[in-house]
Image 1: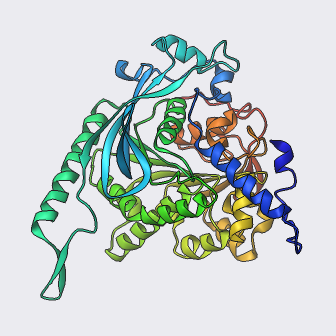
Image 2: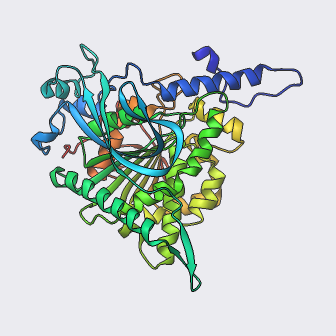
Image 3: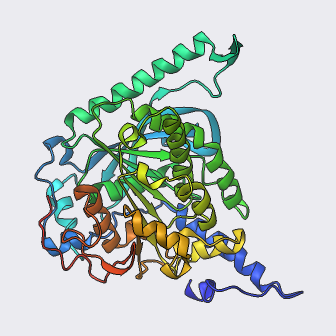
Length: 444
């Protein structure tokens, strides 16, 4: 694969009659799609360097119900439901209604927690740990949106019947999450939002990887939107589906905020999922501030982790930085890799500096001044790649997995003994090889 990617990160002239750049674009679209969406034969990713170095997996606080090779993950989706040979699934087509459900994921085939725990601390495994979805169940279906409304004395009011139906779905949703929170050792939500060309099953298995290696913190939920259209123009179809899903993601986050028992929400968003997530959060932040509410207290987003964000940095400047988005979140971590060829393709297609390929040298004096004062936003340079495209490192790179674990479990800031990243400049840090080899504080 490497020969196909060689030199792609640099601009190539579009000479008259020269079709090689167009061919490279087609090849990269196909490769990026394959890399993002392949779920056949999925196995548990390599153990984080954190656990390998310590030789321990943090299961001391886990109740017996969570010390198992079967994980129950919630999902929220506005994909169109469909029946397959394996039962219920969801396609890349759009649904006007949002659903909450549960996915059962199996780690390995022998059902041994001790073996899974040992494999979770080993740099080399004697055998792979297969991951597979064993069951999908939908438990709450919301009414289709937009809900019908009318004007009454100059006010827009939702019709009574649909409003009651929607509230009933919200109540059922809240009850289901509360039931899980009762057995969770930490009253937190671990939310994953996938990126371009990911199908339903891939989203589930990606969360299964990262949630397990976080030490199974909180209640795991993946928000899966109608991505995975495939084909030459699948990227653009997925971008529009990302815009389509924003309202439903806002409603989901708004409903989560109704659950008083939730102490914190940790969000991990990947690739195009970062655009979906930040757009929804931005609109909620503006709405809540207009009502005199503090979005930091209402939404309780403790960590927003953006891995390989496929965002135009110019848009980030005007829609996030200018709107003072950062102070509404506890901590924002942005993982970047300037060798990310999938973002290199996106940058070529969209003609804007990708946030996930940003370097400190790309900042102007205005951005440097802002970041020097707003210190809860940090950029982590991921130098080592674990695949030819360099885009899926959030779960494939053991050092990145370690940093995500430390960030979520301990809410640690870069440069602390708990999170010994190498400082580059202002809010920019480097993930050193073998990280966190300098770590001195034990994992709680």
